Image 1 (cartoon, rainbow, N blue to C red):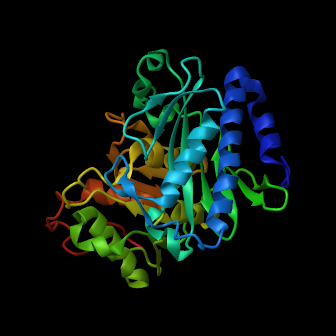
Image 2 (cartoon, rainbow, N blue to C red):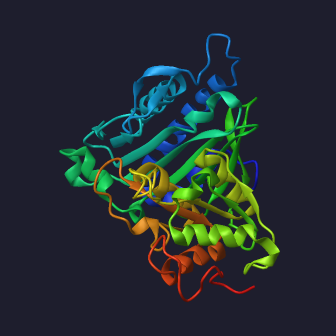
Image 3 (cartoon, one colour):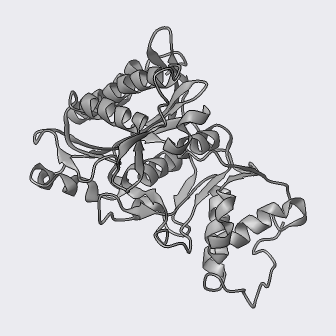
Length: 350
């Protein structure tokens, strides 16, 4: 479809062959888009009545202190999805999955507000969602709907609230980029069939955690830092926005790699990002745009969730760089030990 088409038009064309389920996906995405427009307007308002990043007094499923905007975002999206044929609902801001409609065709998991720690610094923040098929068991146990692997996802996407309010979306086929027309209030197609470029020398990782990294991650980043003098044979730039959506958006528009690995800190042994509503939707999108998304070795989409807020490491982006990281994990000695074969040399040659 040509640039300028509305989100509604694109959804109708992409999902018309999928019958009732396709109509359900279109309805859920449409309702979330309307919630995102409302949330974007809240974010854009001057903070005259108090900062949106101020503590709200509660904690989320992870034990993190909730901000005012976390609560507002959760309310907007949960209310929106009650207007769509959604059977089961899971959010970062609630402890357990809940049943909205036993007859619903979909299960939706969402991080209503990614980037809570940077709300008040005017940096890009966003919302991430995953849409799964409702399964019979979930009519009596909502959590059952979210124990499916990421391969079962029907659609996934994320909104970014920044200089533009954007949406990266796939309903199972191509990945499309939409931008909100603030005057008209509609998301308009800007680019279809996004493809993550190979070869872009840029990585995103929180370097303040370097002392905690396992050896394969440390060695890969060391070799990137060495630039043209290292085994990659070229200089790299580092980027880190402290919000998954911001770093992911950059990868979709120009390539590169993002790493949020497991590390040696207590509680980080299985990574930090939530599998069901952060890592899985990103992996779904990345794979459909020609990239790779792994836990360092294996595809994220093959991980079977055990609990609603399971964590997972995430290495995603350009296929060539993600594959390099995989090779570092497979070829090095056990984590945190020097390899007698390679010493301090890299595993690849220029």
